Length: 333
Image (cartoon, rainbow, N blue to C red; front, side, top):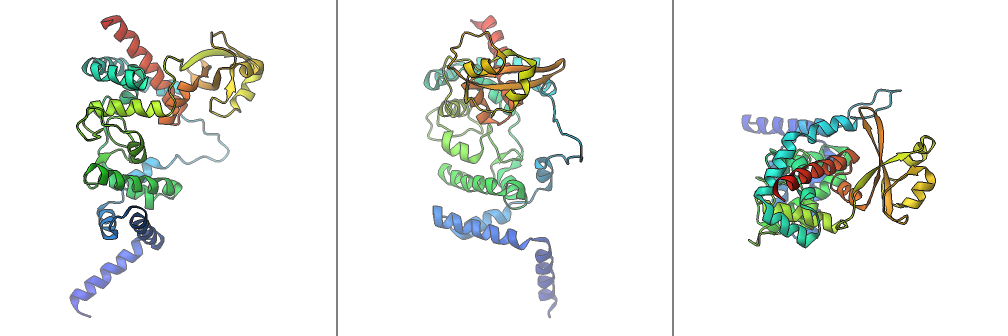
């Protein structure tokens, strides 16, 4: 064996040791799927993926904390989550963002029926009004999560598929686009599938640039909420009281607005709002510093959770939006 061939052999041996065979097949199968379904060149897909890097820190960030046997994991309480987002800095920067983009926001409100403060709060919570859009290469994140993170590999392979499609549709280089460690990107942090379904060219320049163009980002967030059924002029959520013996049964309900206020009242909700008894609602509980508090959530609350499936997230967006709107109204209207 020549010296050169010896080095090649050793290199292939190291490669075979460090690369899981199933992973290699999965990448090949994925490339074949992109050819069959979407007409890509297999060599192009393989070339792009081969230039993506496995990021161990992404796997660490995505892996849930290890559970201690016998101990129930409660997670971070709402009041700690609240301190992170409902701050004077977030509120004041949201007001400034509204002032800078007031004409675009007004147009988005009119077209999609979504309040400016909700759009602003989403962008504030997601990227601090576009200042923190993520520094990971999206292809690195999606490659890592598609082939090295078995927990949700199927989901992330679908997102990788959408990512290559959006790169082709938008004329973008998939090796240069950046976003979060989970593959979300842009001012509003869309996943690739959401980008393809809901992103809009809101400034009419022929491109959906949610990375740098705030008009496109604002229009895209508003369109997302509109498509998920935002009800213009309707409430999001309201605080309520609950009979102590009713809490357990209410907590067992699905986290969806599949129930009526009449049903809730029969179950033990002490609600004093003006909404009709046939209004569709859901039950929301959050841990405050003085104990657990309860809310009635309406369809619009549920729509916020379609952006991020977390009751903490939805409450942060709602409370931030209300504070921004209150102060903006006092100062400028």
